Image (cartoon, rainbow, N blue to C red):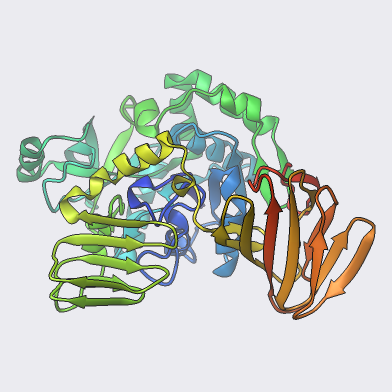
Length: 473
């Protein structure tokens, strides 16, 4: 049995302003109608001998993971929640322990997949999975190496030894860090080096045995975090204290670079980790002028550019080799050869503690979303959508009052000791300090306009008394 392990903990800052801390690239539909997470799950769904996936993510992303998988009719075996980030080795260890305990008497093969990669040749990738299964069954630790197509300096490399079988699986000679351009060209010319994809396949017991050998403290911490964790709703919460005490390391450094059981399967399947806007341009479909255009775009004499208009018209004239990304609250303009430096923008936003690095103007919640359409010193206007059957928490604010106007749908309002219904064009007022809740008892989305007024309008002025989604408050 093969158990896919989908690692969905990345932040994708190099695709800012579209990808942000609370809504990173794995949850975005960057190449087709499905998000990166959905495409990762669909890539292995339905394969013979492949079980439901285990997903590892942080607590803040749990509802997006569950909803996006539900939308493609995939029920994960578990969504495992990391209270803090500890890199890929602990994430895989936790998943391996869970896969063993949930499949008593079976030593499953784990297929470790980052949630934010593109693979164009899905059939070829599936074939490769079946080809390397015998190596995994024999106790080997397999990494998938991408056949390089250019002297790429943004990837680590794997130097391969001689083939072990007729499928092309090779022993790993060594892992090497990201090279400079001249060294990358030497790697490409030699034919012995592959890009390190970050995808792996091995038996759960084989990986855990090597982890115990090379990083025993990490294994103990992961065992404690899982044993002291708890299941709630659709999620498996790891124990915060134990997992926080876990050493932080990648699977490469913790195990793969040290084990004598590592082998590499070369892949030429149109792989891309979409680590920058230029990489996204590489994998997209271009028009006659070499452009990729998304949204409301008008371009004149524009060539070899990536233009994404998220909320309004974007027009370009007489430019080439540009990336233009427009969202409701930020615009990025960069030449394609400098998009790796977007991280410097993110660093400056972090240093200034600006919200644009963390959230979009439109913020998704398990009950729906809100869109901050106007903001000034003592007032804020929001558009709020509550899904059918959903509700916000029972809450109170110390510093702001709220006015609600129903635009469409039906609202059930709790205000202090009162509970009443509002329909289209009706409104209500929530004074400062009064307990309140908004629910959608209907069959269609509830949309309201909320006008806040007060001395402080921050999202941290929420005291939660009851929440059906288990959020602290």
